[in-house]
Amino acid sequence: MARIVMKFGGTSVADLDRIRNVANRVKREVEAGHEVAVVVSAMSGVTNQLVKWCSELSPLHDAREYDTVVATGEQVTIGLLAIALQTIGVDARSWQGWQAGIRTDGAHGKARVEEIDGARLIERMQRGQVPVVAGFQGIGPDDRVTTLGRGGSDLSAVAVAAAVKADRCDIYTDVDGIYTTDPRIVPRARKLPAVAYEEMLELASVGAKVLQTRSVELAMKQKVRVQVLSSFEDKPGSMVVDEDEIVEQPLVTGVAYSRDEAKVTLRRVPDKPGIAATVFGPLADANVNVDMIVQNLGSDGTTDMTFTVGKADLPRAREVLESHRPTIAYAEVLADPEVTKISIVGIGMRSHAGVAATMFKTLAEKGINIQVISTSEIKTSVLVGAEYTELAVRALHTAYGLDAPA
Image (cartoon, rainbow, N blue to C red):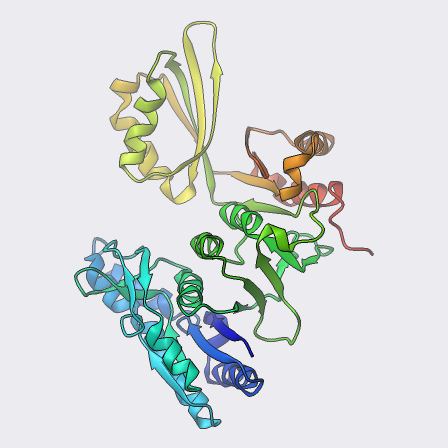
């Protein structure tokens, strides 16, 4: 017997037939003798509609009331799934985030989970009842409903799994696992049986959409074993586990890409101590996240400074830089939203030389110019023109031997 948390996303509960399908999956686990808790998202498209209504009423709406509205999507789903489970003979009860004791900070719209007391959920599970918990929501210090940001149901599921000391957290989605890259771009992408927490964290942060980044962070911190699998097929999924559980560590585990980048270049910035702080301090104050950075020194005492921001943050970044132009004293600002970040990720990169060189050589052979480079211990990322995205991903996937046999 195991204790399992099962999480179902919006496409998995998109209509009543799919909710019945979820109920049958849960029943199978219960009949196998497992203790089960379920975490669900809102039905597909519902949260988008709720967000749209808030924005249409007021673009600068009160974040506390926004949370009150958008949290209702999950409330509908937990009630419907509890009814579906009861109808097929499974003892089940719905739990909103506050009822499950999911305490968060007060950052409405993007709250962080601070603690969950799993005692009440464990007690119900031990009695044979299935708690059906609303994902994406919790309760803040002022006892108001909070939401965890888009994709927050993954985070809720991992947090609940940690709180009830689950043996595994199964994330059911519309894909059947984690692949070496996007199968829509590379048909010969392979499904990975297991991925280390660190690799999944890097893959999620650089564009892989399978798991939300914060959920992977929490899983790694709490040592929650996570399985990603399909709601629509009975196939084994991909496990996200501690590095020690992976017997064979490949050199490169996957190739990820993000089209959500924009490149900003400040031309002829005075090259003097503190200039980086002068540039990036105001951007940080405006909550503009800066990613890749490169600096080119000139011979005339100036430097060109290039960095990337999220595409959605580009207008705000330009506004901040323009307002601080007298302080920074740059000659001009150039912006290019037509770029893509391509990344290779693998824990095997720690102990092997020449991995990045293979990346650079492969892109050069395809005539793809690298605009910016950034590296970490298990990741190398490059910025290229958006028009080269698919070519770059396919070429790198082949170069690192990730293609499935023909």
